[in-house]
Amino acid sequence: MISFYDELEIEDFEFDEETQIYHYPCPCGDRFEITVAELIDGEEIARCPSCSLMVRVIYDPDDFQDGNT
Amino acid sequence: MSKTNLYAFGSNGNGQLGVGNKDDVLFPSPCSFSGHTNPFIDSPQMITGGGNHSAVITNKGELWMSGLNTDRQCGLPSNISNLTAFEKVVLNEDKNTNTQSISAIKSVACGWTHTIISTERGDVYAFGKGSFGELGCGPSNLALNGKILRVEGLANVCKVACGLRHSVALTTNGVCFGWGSNRYGQLGTIINNEYNEKLVGLSSKSTKNIQYFSPVRIAIDKESSFFIADIACGRNHTVVLSAAGDIYTFGNNKYGQLGYASPHDITHAEQPRKVSVFPGRIVEISCGWSATIARNDDGQVIIWGRNDHGQLGIIQRIESEDQGFIIQPVPLCYIPKLVVFPDDGHRHVIAAVTCGSEHSLAITTTGQCLTWGWNEHGSCGSGNTVNVLSPKFVNGDGIISKIGAGCGTSWIWISG
Image (tube, rainbow over all chains, first blue to last red; front, side):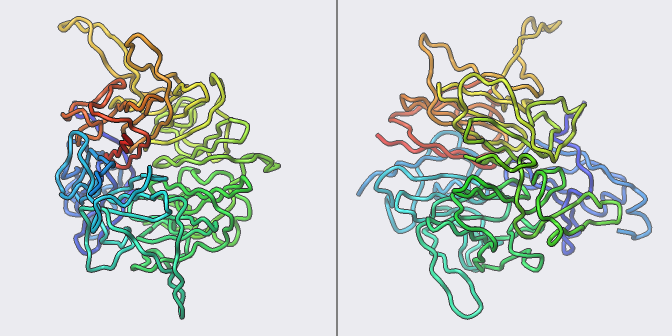
């Protein structure tokens, strides 16, 4: 069973236009990240590159279909 | 050459510990000060950390910072992306025509990518970046690009505090003001809110994403009769201490951090409510990301909120089918609990407490430091990365008289 650090709505994330990454602060100082491509694929786990923590992203998959980001 | 008395441990990916490199540190290591061996005559006034940057105020009111500066959250020019040693920050207020030097810093708080300071004169300044209004410098100033701007509408401020996306200031008159995100009610019940309320969000669905780009007064009760003596901010909650020693909380309660109701019953609350039943009189408060800690005048520590990584230091013994009795952290406590310190034959009287993002520090009146909580980056100073589920002493010589913490980061001041 995966244990999530948190479950967060996509609205809680900040979006980086340049890298097309949604990100949210991790308590270690790095950021939980998930790409637009991953969201289009239905991925719901945002990971921190620097530690073991991960968060589940709550979003409406329809918002990320047909280039509607 | 004098010896450095400030030691750090924990997460250090951007040099925020100020120990001279960018490697995580698992046990207390001496901090470095650019151009100086030791800029301190005596114990610093304040040590604190934010997302990836940190700040120390010396007893002379100088501000020294280390860590990430890509959003100029260390108050330094943009050609410096980060610092691995503490650097003295000389602040000049950016007014359109003239610049005014800011001296005698009294209080500092570091958010995720921003910094708020207050001066001896009681003025408040912001620098860094704050997409949620946490700079308090108006809706057009989400990134100050190195400018140090005054937060208008505030006077006689004696302390500032930062959550992840909100900021709070306390005046010498016992009144507090907040700005930034109010998504979870972390700015409380707001007075005079009509002129600076903004609704923003990714879509029309997110109308609850309320943000304030300038300070609004936080009222604790209808009459606003409380004299507020101290403030503290968690990730999405706020705690105030009245002069009478009462604690009021508001904001997110997802992990019971408000201290009076189960997250199942109250998910968040904008109305400040008193947290009851403490032994003694509360004299100090601090917040982790989702936990609240308080110290009373008898040197006892009371704590509540999230505990899945041992943040509260509260454990339970449960019987496991294949391992016998095992020790586990209680997932959360929404009712305040007394922290139990190691039993070595005498009672430990606590002189100060502080919380990092997901860990806590305390010092005893005899100058020993205890830590507990999330330790994946070494922020408990135990020499390894195993979570510390109940308070443990940090090994080291000398009398520890000051502590500070940030996101996975810890500092101790060894006075002798």
